[in-house]
Amino acid sequence: MSYARMDHAEWMESNLSAERRANERARAAGKKIPYPDIPDKLSPFQEVVCDIIGIVGGGIYNAPISKWDWHWGTGVSVVWRGDLATYDFNRLTALVMLCHEARIRCDISPAMRNLRISFWPRVADRTQGSALFHPNIDEAVATLRGYMPADHRIFQQGRPVPATKAEQPDDKSMVDEAGYLVIEDVQRTAA
Image 1: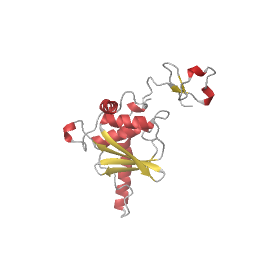
Image 2 (image 1 turned 60 degrees about the vertical axis):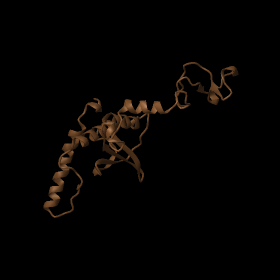
Image 3 (image 1 turned 90 degrees about the vertical axis):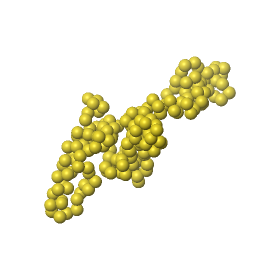
Image 4 (image 1 turned 120 degrees about the horizontal axis):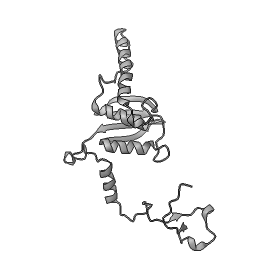
């Protein structure tokens, strides 16, 4: 089953019901409320954040989260106890792309040995200014590509593949002055 097809917000809502009951028992007993920050009901924005975290975390119940802050200013914040990467175990890529598609500002900052991932709602209307506007993924890619020259070395397309020492060919005519293999249309994986 795909985590993209699950209703992570529904799971969270049922989990929060148990926390609300624990709050009521503590309140009735005159004790400290164990979960003071939980909302009475998830807002549509909080539901989308639950879905994003559920997809990125391999199910919201599996996500490596040690703390939820439901009222982080106008947003939501979590303390994430795992890593984030762009390709293999691509949680970072999924997080960034999903936030762009949902037009949610995401901030990743240090939290001791963990990461704090915070989310704030944004809008599609550019006239609202940069504090409220957020591009979707297509707009973000177009902006980046418009900013970078097409021939910048950061882009892999059309660039020769760097040769490692183990890949040095016997025929030195295949290597340019900078040590790059001169091979057409070849992409090299990480060494």
